[in-house]
Image (cartoon, rainbow, N blue to C red):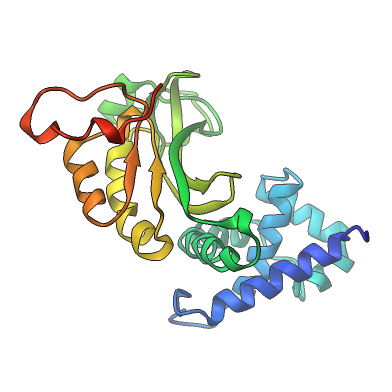
Length: 256
């Protein structure tokens, strides 16, 4: 068996992105044409993530020292650090659509990529730099000498990590961990809000039979609404309460 090379993976990413770009979920760009193509920077940032090179200054330095790779990415010159930062932030919605496209596109390639049974959960990630204590954040006050503070983050509590200042990754994947939908919000944004936002693309695009969640997603009205569309929303909670709306839903809960 031939082991794929780095160049093979880069070629695959470009091929997949071209197919995605031809798909109707790709977003047209208005205004002045990009100096650096979307697909070039998309593939470049994926490679940088795999190399765990996160700082834009380090990414630019890597491009300076690897002129042969600039040709592979289709970059005629080295983007400025500020350009890399700005374009990286602007790629979020395109990356969301790209992941959803791959999740649907891969279904016919291998049974392991099926969307029959999905799961969703929220993971917390600490923001880079110092934390912004809630009392200061509420008052909009940045303490003196507090440098490199990420003011976009917020606080949330994890059962595994305790209180975290940063962001939440809301991931929908299948049984083997193949991603289907991704959404990033500040840490304090509730799973309930995100699952309701994801409901339409999740059900309409992937047509799952079941979606497994934790207790924070378990709401009688949501379970009934999804059931009417042929999707069983599973939760580890052992039993429902005795309100009329909850009657008959015990079979939709799996043992903890």
